[in-house]
Length: 426
Image (cartoon, rainbow, N blue to C red; front, side):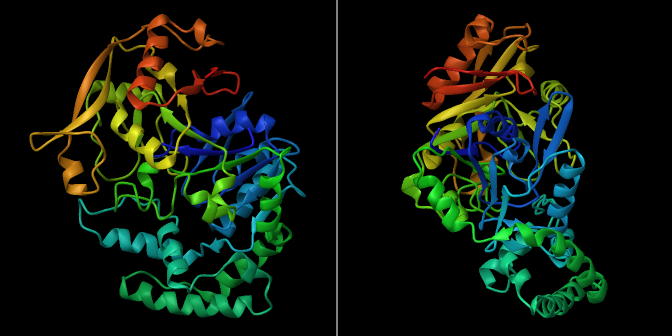
């Protein structure tokens, strides 16, 4: 595998956790490089289900070293709770989990500000934030007023924290929100950081040694998807970090030329959580079927996901800016019961054909999907263990998507379990 990046190529929730878990069987390192606990990766192992928000998915594999990189914003209480739950379930990660001392902290005031600001937005203007404090934490980072993991190791950290709480309480007052009690908050974080301190270190040297080691296999694990990228997504209905392959170098501290392979994760259809334009969204029985059969509810929020047909315009766009070498095509089995399957091959906007994703949110909102129809296979794919065992129509569907997007499929998922994964030769 060498140095491999896995990115979501739609609006997130594509099934990255499962792909990463499968690939970590061969990995030495798994690295998260952006985002926070506003994303969740669901992994099913036997009869056990794990939902990971900050811990890299490799944490479930004994011996795999895991890094929470500098590009993340980390909710320390959320991370401590997640790690303690894993320990209770028998996962031993001590000595192989490393948290960058350059990663920024999400403090309770970030969450309060997140919710208060969202509440102030008018209907139609709301972002659909998870209210986990991600945006305000990244804003503090850019404003150079944030706190970092390494600050926790300093003798004056609690004084710095109190200073920030006082400043944020003034903002909360302006927004009409209740102020935070500094004494109780500082005491709570003191206990949390006593637990986390052993994991905090400078991860840059170790990662650079790993990506230069020809015998080491390193996986860089993205959160969300390209269409939620702060620069290239459906702005402003996006997250606050660089979700694509371009975020790896800055989010992990490695040279970009050390990336050998980029795998884009896409569903065989499309979903989205939160607000913003979604050209192929289905508000009919087909959309409801996709949601029910695909169990399309957010791993972090539990919100029902908006569902629609596969959007080849989005996939081509993500492949272009992400340098995607191959697809991992997820949830093929969800389409098993459809007589007819549609795929969006272009958009129509104001009487013109549009072949890529426009930057203008107004224009994208006016885009209508141009569909091509495909005859479904109407039988189960879940028993297939090789590509050849799939129904012929399902095989044709995969090849059709490859042709439409210009990217080959190398991994195919026909169910939630580790074993329900087919690797294709490309």
